[in-house]
Length: 374
Image (cartoon, rainbow, N blue to C red; front, side, top):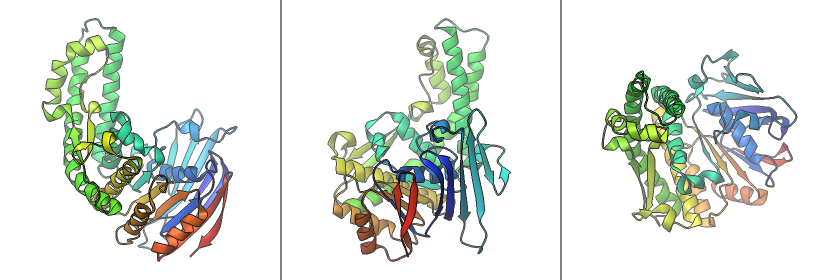
């Protein structure tokens, strides 16, 4: 799968920008704040229909405007001249619209997974340091791109959970009557069971891919692992809700369920965030995302787009070289988009390991030009 070109209108700091993409490596170089990351986010939007950090669409509208529009051309490389045209438009106070070849999706969820994508950004260290919501987002992002049923169950679960929490809040800690809580409980059971089973099945192959990527990038210096923590590992959702009914009434929220799941990361069998250096954390996050990439490729039959934002920050030169050698395998990795602040470093590193077509773009204040294209 290739993104042959994409177009931004009123997107963040871009008034209007057309980008013609190289088939393998596309490198955006420029100073911090110039708009490199915004280009990667535009690609992510076209693939997933939303921002990579789940922020509001309104934050992506250029200041002073009331809409943004993105367009991308995707090719599977099988039929010459055959491309999908994806258009995404966000207008203030109106419903977001995503079109494929001129026809709008009835549901935005139907777009997810058609063009698999993996993004690595500096903030991904939050996967290790911050709360469990970041790690659940990794699980959901991975599974939603390969299993449309999972996405449906997740949407259903979150909707019912919101309704249940609203009811508990409305009751203000007082006893509930009328049986509505029990109805919500029943509606949570089936999606919770499916989601839990899917996450359990995901963890073993994901861990294997994580360790393989970590060995490659770190040159076998660290041994890492992960464990899936869930309240449903020990009891059913039905038992959990029944056991916590009184607690939920007092707290005025649902205290048990798959929305409390977590991943536990380790290095040499110790908690990762307590023993890893900054370089090791960066390596681990890269390994997580490369593991995600490989599972998406295996399960979708497509090579996802790989978006790497400021990957050289806090990585030593040996690990950078190992990473580039790893992703410079066209049978494994397809089209890759990279951002960096140093054009000479980017060109030097790519020239040392890449023997294929690539483009380097200079980004400055919301505009860009092609400097090198092979």
